[in-house]
Length: 212
Length: 150
Image 1: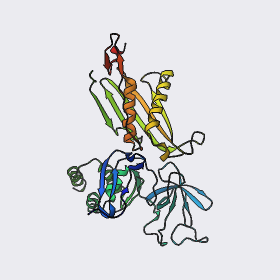
Image 2: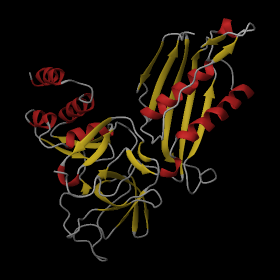
Image 3: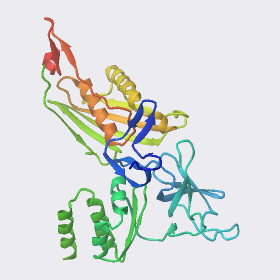
Image 4: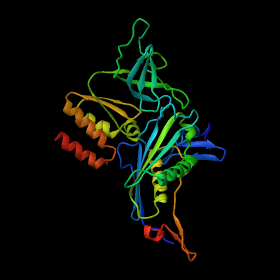
């Protein structure tokens, strides 16, 4: 039976007068649910802001009521001081230049400056907000982030058996890690950076070397 | 009508968003792509991305020949790049000639195409280049070496 609903064209595919145009190189994926969706799984390092992405931004300037954040795209994103949980005109959040913020992109298209918020539609922060002091921020490719964000990711499960740590993944390629000591943090950073090109076997050997 | 053995490698540089090395026989060109990044206010266009091509020769400073080749590469890349998807941004393509043994322009074109692909920029199609030389007696040579070009 033919699936019901419209067919979705995801990233890497564009509709033009001549039909469907492939614009990026990668693997073509298909999701059969509800009408079907096709997209091209491509690899890139540069982030292009897209609506609804959870990203890690670095505060670069405070301009009156609005913070300017660098999210890795061509434009700086803006974040209003009222977009935090429990923030009012009298109760402002304590944000300084250079702080890390984990938030969601509310508005992101090619014509406008991106806008970020740290609350969801019901007003709760649900994990978003200022990322605490210490920790280590580093940049990886976007394909690795998508791999790590997949449910039941093996790399994260194996890492959590090594030491306890806090991890924030931003869809703009930025990862923030914090473990109990600096050495443990650096070990986790090196494993995450190297896991892009390691097979499962090489990963197990690396873990055995680190924990043994 | 035979081409020299050619090969290419992607993602070899860590700083640019996309990089590629293209080798045709002994001719090799390294390409680095940066973008879409913030453009200077004087250079940005409101409806499309600005593409800038820089061709660096192996020795010496870029001269008139490099400038004319840069314009040709820029026109070719603009024909396939979907610039309207990234308005007010700048895309930079830097090509470095590592060794020149004939057919340099087609090697630059191929390296540019593979570099743009590696950077994940939206392209409407791919392009490539082959150099042809016409022998005085009428035969066509493909991918000539420097000696054959003379």
